[in-house]
Amino acid sequence: MSVFTQERLTALNAAYARCIDNDELEQLGDFFLDQCLYLVTTADNYASALQAGIVYADTRAMLQDRVMAMRDANIYEEQRYRHIIGAPVLLEQEGDTAKAESPFIVVRIMRDGSTEVFATGRYIDCIVAQPDHPLKFAERIVVCDSCNIDTLLVIPL
Amino acid sequence: MSVFTQERLTALNAAYARCIDNDELEQLGDFFLDQCLYLVTTADNYASALQAGIVYADTRAMLQDRVMAMRDANIYEEQRYRHIIGAPVLLEQEGDTAKAESPFIVVRIMRDGSTEVFATGRYIDCIVAQPDHPLKFAERIVVCDSCNIDTLLVIPL
Amino acid sequence: MSVFTQERLTALNAAYARCIDNDELEQLGDFFLDQCLYLVTTADNYASALQAGIVYADTRAMLQDRVMAMRDANIYEEQRYRHIIGAPVLLEQEGDTAKAESPFIVVRIMRDGSTEVFATGRYIDCIVAQPDHPLKFAERIVVCDSCNIDTLLVIPL
Image 1: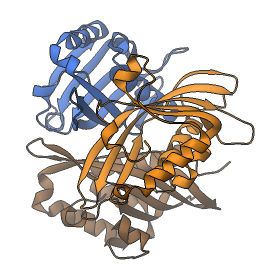
Image 2: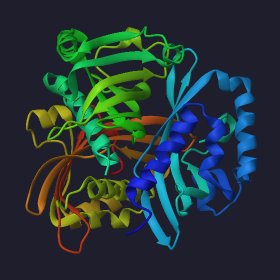
Image 3: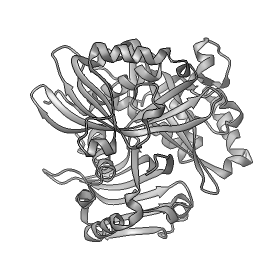
Image 4: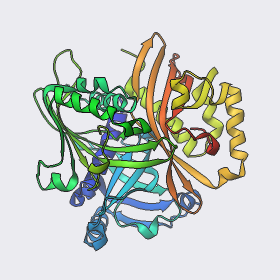
């Protein structure tokens, strides 16, 4: 029996999205290993195998620092986000490590109530199972469909 | 083995959304206990612990009455809705009762075909399991991300 | 134990969406039986029991042909799509065949980065289980909520 059931992968995504959308960013690092990669990039860059993009962090501590810095930006106070993550596709697994891909849509809600699709794309993840622990991300690469996401990015995706 | 599996919670949400989007509103009350709370509110109100908002019903009969009244409004004939509900997060459970939270996005499709994001938010639910019955809502609090949802609201969310 | 678990139905939808959104259209036919129906129509037509609409194919070969023709259209190069498919509702099953319904939203991302909701609706599927094979579609009827989807349609939904 695989430890990477659809149920567990789905629960990981759901908890991650809830952490961001409920503004519980202090906990976002808990979803990652100490040594990890969190990268936001565009589909064009990803297809070109460019590691360019918006690198958030390659350790959990760096990720957590940057996430908290985002919250300090004034603009952050003025908007909310809502993630809807589609069902994950398990691409491969070996031992305690798996690769999976999940589509997402993020809607942004401004202070005046106006609502729009802010970003879409897919998470390409490397996920690690440890005994008696929830699944964690060794890598979460956020591949945005749109080419001009970066100038607007003020929260984690 | 918990009766509140992700599969059962997901199926409850999916059937609820289908009931609304397929315009089978006569059945919406079936998802609730006789004594229940169905409340639509905003994130700001919810964060302030205000019970203000758009209270739809505190019994199943009242809920069903109000839902049917919505259908009579002329404007309802002119539009469709489409719910996409993200995976539920099980927050706590004790015996036959559980609390769960699920994100949603609702798209509105006007008679002329124009399509827009109408509402986003999260369902905060108290769900009850009874032997040989589907899960039912003791509470469904619909917390909308946007502050100005109320003036437009003509269908259940 | 049913072969049509929520997990298997969800995995089928997820793999189908991924095939389209990742532009792996050569594989789209693999999700269908040799004799199949793939039909895109509107909610109004479907409610009137009209078979009118945009018939894509009634065999896998025809479906595959048409899908590849879409890719050749210049306009296709200029845009991306992102499907988010909600949880399937199992409507009925008998032996190795089941009927299920799943809601969807498709977002379109233009070359300049602009992003909008392109289509919403529901898949109404007849799905067949074969020993040692993934589930396949005998029928996938794509019922779009909007009445004017057809003039814009350049990719499979």
